[in-house]
Amino acid sequence: MPRIRVNLKGKPSDYGLHPWIFRDRVKGVIGQGFEAAVYVKGKFFGSAFYNPEGKLALRFYSRDEEDFTAGLVYSRIKRARYEREKILGFKNAYRLFFAEADNMPGIIADVYGRGAVIQISSYGADKLRREIVEGFRMAGYRWLYEKSDSYARRQEGLEPYEGWHFYDEEISHVWVEINGLKFRVPIGGQKTGMYLDQRLNWEIVGRTMRGRSRVLDAFSYTGGFTLHLLKYGVEKVVAIDEDGDALGILRENVEANGFHKKTVETFTANVFDMLDSFLLAHERFDGIVLDPPAFAKGRNVSGARRGYFTLFDRALRLLDEGGLLAVFSCSRHIGFDLLEGEMTRAAKRLLREVKILYKLHQSPDHPVPVYFPDAEYLRGFLAIVY
Image (cartoon, rainbow, N blue to C red; front, side):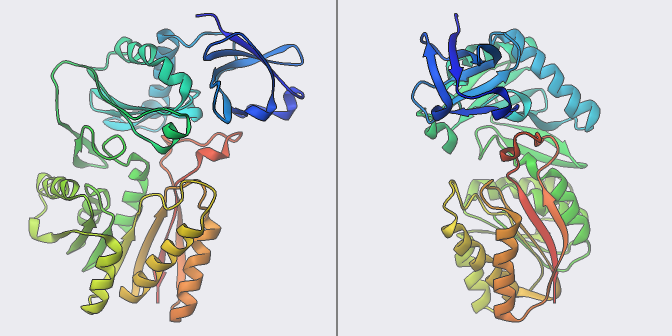
């Protein structure tokens, strides 16, 4: 398909290698389509997906003059596999494509065993779905499922999409191993089935809370933190999530790893309501993990501030002296300053001493290019409370 020509305002140094161009920087467009050859001052500047309607007009997929083909997808898969498997040492489950960070704008792909789950959130990638799917076939994957229902997709004017692209045999789940633990991954579950961005944090939190008597895992999903807490000898984990199906998988995961089912107590409930119930019942914990969904989808973070302050206030009231608290945010609009500021407000109000032991980030299979800091979205800390 012929590519359109897009001319940008200014000079190349105005842009560097940032993968996004907003519409107010577009000087002119020649032709119609969704793949663009981009020029600045008459010189070629890159190949990009073009959205004729969106505020975000261009997303670069290459700095060379090339079309987005199945062959290009296949070559990107080979490079991403090398980085994840040979450099990072991840084998059984990992993020293969982290969108712009892997020059695959708006394309997420998580590998689970011999297959993968993809998410597509950009206009151009949505139009080129066939090429993406064929690239995965060429790379030898046995199955490919798509779960495209993100907020970013709606911003691009795209409807949700979910379904199979190919498979040897249709499956409802797959078992993978991460950090020496077995996990049942539901195909079609939340996100792509797991929150792989936490894989290193699961280990850090589990190891640091080793041997604790009673730990609360709030927003537990299928048990990433729960299993690692049990792995490191925590006597009892209390897991809370609104998704009853996810908690059912959590219990399966507990038994599949040889942990006694009595080591875990699960509650299908709203976390905020359960925290209040625990306070009324004078419950106590010597460790708490708070891993909520994104509280801020956009730049307005006022609601997120209130949410985190409430979580911190309740957690500090429930923690024993010397208790450990792990907290996370999965929104790129929430920085460490906001998290620490709300924690400080809650700690001052309750006169509790809080010392940060670790600052925590997303797993390295979710890399952050230096020219695209927006790729950093997962932040957290692990603290001791007196």
